[in-house]
Each structure stands twice: as C-alpha cells, then as structure tokens.
Image 1 (cartoon, rainbow, N blue to C red):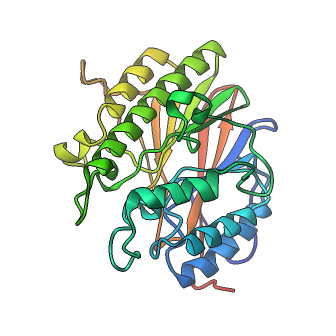
Image 2 (image 1 turned 90 degrees about the vertical axis):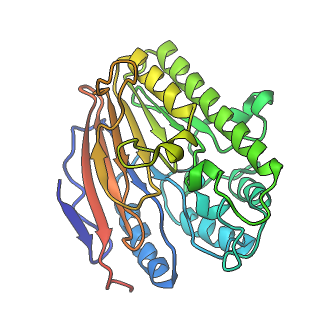
Length: 314
C-alpha cells in the first residue's frame, strides 16, 4: 500500500482487481488555500487520466471565507472532473462559518446556500451524472437532498450528512435554539437514512454497503463528550453492522490523517465488528486522494494512497 506522488497528470493506475470491479477515488479536506488550489488542478488532471466509476468528496471543500462565490468556485473545480462526483458537506462549508475570518455568517444560512448551490434541481457534480436517489424524496425529510444512495456492482453506496465540530453542536457566539434543533433533526435524518440504506441493501441482497460521511468518531481517540454528540447515529451503526453480517465500509475525512482500520465494536459484547472497515482520507496540507478498487467477488478492498507533490504547482 504505497504512496504515488503526482508530478504530472497521472500515476500508474494499473492493478487492484480484475476487470469489472468497482474503482473509485475518495478525498476531502482540501483545497484550503491558493497553493492547494493550484495543486488541486493537478489532482483533477490525475483523476481525469484514470479509469474510475465515480469520485467521492467527503467535505471541507474550502477554508474561509464561506461566501457563495467561494462555494461556486469549488463547484466549478469539481465540474472539471470528468467522472461522476458524489459530495457530502463538511463543517467548513457551513457549521464553522460564524467566525470573523469566515465571514461572520449564520451557519444555518450557509447550510441553505450549500444545499441550493450543490444539491439544487438539475445540479450534477462532476462531468457525468451519478444516478442516485435522495432522502428528500420522502416528504418527512424533504430538506435532505444531500443524503444520496446508489448501487454499483451489487454494492450499495450512500452519503450521510454528519459533520465535525461536535456534529454541528459546537459553541459559538450567537448560537440559537434553532441551531440545536437543526443538529437534532439532521442527526435524526442521518439515522433514518442509515436504516433505510441497510433495509435497501437487504432487499437487494447487496454484497456490501459503503457509507460516506464527513466525520466519524472513534471512541478510542475522541472524548466521551465528543462521541455523545454523534449518538444515536453511532449506536444505530453498530446495530446495523452487527445484523447485516456482510462487509460495511465507511469513508470519511475531518481529521486529515490517512487511516485504514476496524474501529467499531459491539458495545453489548465488546467485540470488534470485523465486517466494518474505516477509511479516513488525508487532508490539508496534503492534497491527495485514495484510489479504491473493490473486488466484488470477494468484497476485498485494495487501497492506493496518492498525493500531489507539494512543489508541483504548475
């Protein structure tokens, strides 16, 4: 599992599995500044030179300001990718936008902007559409157009809007009761979408499930108070994984470190849920991605970490 450093437009994209398997790229928490933006152009060129089924961006498209202009700039950059792109929002796009340097925005107003710009009617991210159903099809969750689900190679994929910064519950000047209610509702929507995704996977006799979020909390590396901000999602995830008894793969960002491990345990027994694999993608200051090949016969995952050389700005 080496690291490919991009000096031009492509890495060696061979290997990983036989023809017909699922090949996708996951990345996030970038670009944050002007030189990462230049490196991001090379990242896009590398992805466009690759053969991929789709691309996953796990959120944090930017780091201040949180303006509509910056959000649209990032969308235009993603539209340069010739493959379908699935995106789930990060905290930098809306939750953390209350600070002066970020623009002094109301976080919930920025969330509405993200939904309008990235998930509005007729918006496809990337150069090709990704046929997917949205949670907003259910009138009970009409505002959650960002939670999407699709199938590829007998595997069910789903994006679920769970952000960092204490799951959007972080304290800030001017925080209102509406912010708390919105965090509760978004978490409830995440739980409902998680349950619906495993139901759909069971009905389809899917080979496995891949979940995509911005943030995930590992009880071994986060405080109990921080973990509590993500309940009942984590508890429900444990239950669904234990009951499903097939491979479940979670892709996320937020902490900016490359990690592949098995961090989920059944709290009833204390046993590690070995069917659950977590990929945390690297992030700023590294501009990189992880190429994933899924062998759909064995449901084994091959990971290849890639990055743009930090001096490669042109």
